[in-house]
Amino acid sequence: MLLRIDGVTKHFGEEPVLAGVEAVVRRGEKIALVGPNGTGKSTLLKIVAGDEEADRGTVEIAESVRVGYLRQQPDLDPEKTVWEEAKTGLAELYRLLAEAEELAARMARESDTLEQARLSQRYDRIHERLLSENAYHLDHRIERVLHGLGIGRSAWSQPCRELSGGQQRRLMLARVLLSPVDILLLDEPTNHLDLAACQWLESYLRQLAAAVVLVSHDRYLLDAVADQTWELFQGTIESYSGNYTRYLKQKEQRLLVQQRTYERQQEEIAKLEDFIRRHHVGQKHAQAEDRRKKLERIERVGPPRAIEAPAMRFPPAPHSGEIVLRVERLAHRFEEEWLFGDLSFDVQRGEKWGILGANGTGKTTLLRCLAGELAPKRGRVITGSGVRVAYFDQQLAELDPSEIVLEAVRPDQREFLESDRRNLLARFGIARDMVFQKIGQLSGGERTRVALARLAAAEANLLLLDEPTNQLDLWARSALETALRSFDGTVVFVSHDRYFVNQLADQLLVFEPDKVRRVHGNYDTYRMLQAQAESEESAEAATSSRERKETEPSRQATGRRKPKRRFPYRKVADLEADIAECEAEIESWHQRLADPEFHKEGERVQQATAQLEELDRRLEQLYLHWEEACELDGK
Image 1 (cartoon, helix red, strand yellow):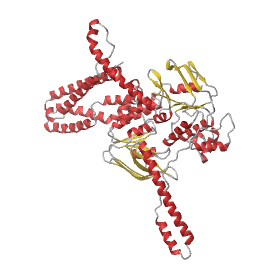
Image 2 (cartoon, helix red, strand yellow):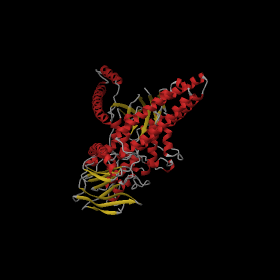
Image 3 (cartoon, rainbow, N blue to C red):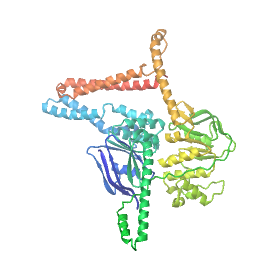
Image 4 (cartoon, one colour):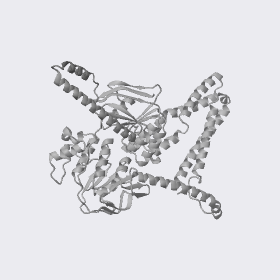
């Protein structure tokens, strides 16, 4: 056991957000912490991390257990570069490496046997720690994490103050992932990550030895990583084995049992109360008294712990022509950089199109061109007969913060009675006194649901949605998926929520580095095509490698120039073998330096240190060569 949460309670008003939370984290566990917005997930992580204090209860962390925490708010040093800030995650290991080098040098110079033995013992302890943390290639570890999270090499020397909000968030995640910890607390780690970075994060967390407590709305991530799910609801935690999908199945079964148990007890209580009421005086008074005592002894079972999702629904779509949108040779750029060019496609009535791609590739720009919000530099968008467009802006710019919710959903083009507006808002989870609040007083998730209700009020037959699931909890996302699947109009949407894309899309436009690719299918279809392409590329690379070897002599003989590379062509597998050999040789030298006898000859220690420096330089070159080979082989 690494950590125990015992009776943690926290109030932000009269009702507690956390009402006696009990939970345990064990070594290596991967835990998904789920619950509707506002149930206290982030608050619980803050209390565990020590950023907030509980009103009651305790958090017990085992001795020497290290906790890493990804906060929601940026906490970067604005003057440090991206590389320097990422490096702070490994500050302790860099300090130990420096101390190990200093100890090795001191042992080489030291003539006193007792002092040399003392230095050697200290060196051995540090060396064992460095080995256990795999700490002899820290720069490469930083490169791997930054690349994985989509922070390119060109940004590494950039000061943190110049980063966008999304870049800052990714750098904070990189820093905490690099930290050598035993428990990792991650609060919405996929915010501002594109598809490739989300896939990389899944793989990284699965392989991580540390325990992880993960708060996320990314259902693919929860399914890929979690082996246990905690449901935080009504102030307490219920634990389920397995990932998010298994949790949903177990939850459904548990609710059935809870419902039957609750109903049986309510029937028994009703019978007892009826008997007591009818016979509290008269001949059966004694029996009524016995039943009253029995009633007092009954341990009341609460109603099922059901989490209700809003019953979202869009009205029937007005009829439109068969071709809803015709896009002809569409192209757009900002300044001199073209985001996309020569896009041509037809969107037919009733289709659901998803737009995917890395951050900054032009997904939102394309959607704005389709909506008529932005004039393209070239090409045109033709709207079909009878098409009525409604556009959902992820910035929610159409909502005036000073406006009352009830007025914010009133459509411009027609009369809409207050009772109808209230019913509409209720379907999207905005009810009772909330309808009289100002937009600016609502939470992010509540504002998103108001914007979706406003979209439904437009009675459009073409919905253009830019990240509609942002700030919605898992239950609201599921409700939106159901509502859009049953909508008989046409939907074109941008989303980084892979689960949402998979549930809704029947066509995809994928922004790839050199083109925009059309996929007939959903996200699973795209993943399958990706896997096939990678397999074919590997096969082509192997064939190309054989052909190069066979033709190399003739090329040299005829004087043909080889393709320009920084390094000579080598197979990836051969480079990986050399890397492993070099790392083994480095490890061998470290083992020798760990032997006190070795340090009796100062000249030998100096030679070993020089050899290690040379091996480190060679290993760095091998890694650069390997990266180039991975990128260029088969191309």
